[in-house]
Structures are given as structure tokens and as C-alpha cells.
Amino acid sequence: MTVAAARGLWFASARSAELRSEAVGDPQEGEVLVRALYSLVSAGTEMNVYRGEAVSALEVGLPTRKGQFPFPIQFGYQVLGRVEVAGTNARYAEGGLVFCQHPHQDRFVIATDFVYPVVAGLSPRAAAFSNLCNVALNCHLDVPVRLGDCCVVSGLGVIGTFAAHLARKTAATLVLVDPLPARRRFAQSVGADAVVSPDEAVAAVEELSDGRGADVYIEASGAPEALQTALACTGVEGTVAVISYYGSRPAQLTLSPEFHLRRQRIVSSMVGMVGSGLQPRWDKRRGWPPRCTSSRK
Image (cartoon, rainbow, N blue to C red):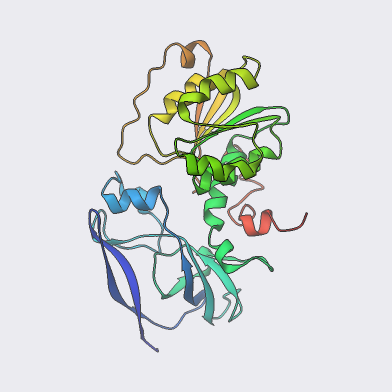
């Protein structure tokens, strides 16, 4: 076996990261050796692990992680790279671009169960965002935005912006919410009916929904206090879909009057599984964005 050196990023303790030398061997059956081109940080789960705010080893359950919970640990899952060597029955050709659910490392061997193809014509830099798009897509599978709905998306980071673009395809009314002016300016490209700050959200939704409130409210901000605004904006029997990950931070809510009197639902959307009774037809590979949301018009 050929053994080469690689560099991997480890979380040594809370808010402490370091590069370590990693031994990389030859890929075996069903594995590929990948050289990384781009590596993305997850602002949710991964940053909670880095800050020491993760609450359970279940949060770092991917088999590609190394170390122990909570520290030291090598954890991450968004690497775009090129296959250097393919093992037997690996399904991917040498030289091909792939997205890998692997921690940040410049070269690594990975089982193809955690490798996804990049659709032809998609740039490597854009393809690096595939998993974040998948989080937004999975939310829309869990809580569909129907034709004619009033939808609100709170938190206009990468995932929230993806969720807003998908919502715009069906929502009759779309309101976007974020406290940062720069994010609100960037989100103007979505074509929403209103892009507002959190303190303007209730009035904007009230006006644009003719007093009914939101049918679907997607909470993607990562701020626990944003859930309270979600309840205030959501209408009778409306649904709040939570794709934010709060880690150990408590989300304290005042449930009366909106939650009780309006019979609202709060739904957890977690990208690790496809829910809502879709499992017989949808698996992770069907929902992978470069394949399911291709560049075809």
C-alpha cells in the first residue's frame, strides 16, 4: 500500500483549530482518493461543534469524522474535489469532480456512499454549496410551499437564500427577513414582495397577507429568538419550519396567544433524513441538488 501525507483540520478544544498531518493510503473497493479543491464551513452544526456548543455525539455521527466527542475531533462535511484514484467498483472515474461529506482535508480516501456527482457544466466553486442547497430543498420536502401561499423566510444566509429562491417558485407572496442590511440588499435578487428587518416583519406580513398571516414560515436564521417572531407572523393552522440548528442555546418562547389560539405547528427539518412519508420514493441521492435542480430551464 502507498502511504502519503495530507493535512487535515482538527478542533482541539472549544474555539481552537489546528492543522494535523494525516496518513492517506490507497483506496480499496468502493472507495476513492480525492484531492480537495474547495472546502465549505457549515455555519450551523460544524460551528456549534467548534464552539463547544454541541450537546450530543449524535450530532457528529458521520462515519467520516475522526477523533472523539467533544474534543479533539475532525468534523466537517462539505468538500468539493477531484478523484485522483478510484478503487474497484467505485462508480466514479479518475479526474471526475465530486462533492464529499468529509472533514476539511487536502487529500483523503472516502467510501462512495458519501460521495456525490457534480452535474456537467456546474463550476466547482458553485458545486461546493451543494449540501447547503440540499438543506433548503429538504425543508421544502418537509413543508411544501403551495401555489398561492404566503411564505416568510427568516435568516438570509446561504441556506435561507436558497430556501427563498425555492419558495419563490410557488409562493404567491414572499417576505424575507434579516437584521443585516447587506443581506437584505443581496436578497433583493430573489424577487420577494418585501425584504424587511425583524422588527418590521409582523406589519409586513399582516399587510401582504390581508391579515391572514403566513401559511409557511421558514426559520433559517440560527437565532433562537427568531422563533418568537415566527409565531407572531404565522396564521391560523400555519406551519413554522425550523431548519436552523441552535445547539445548546435555549429557545425560550411565549406560546400564548399565537401558538395556542392559532393552532400552529412547529416542524423540525433535518437534512440527515427525508421525512414526511417520502422515503419510499426519495432518498438522499434523488434529492441531491446538482442532480435534482439542474441547469435546464
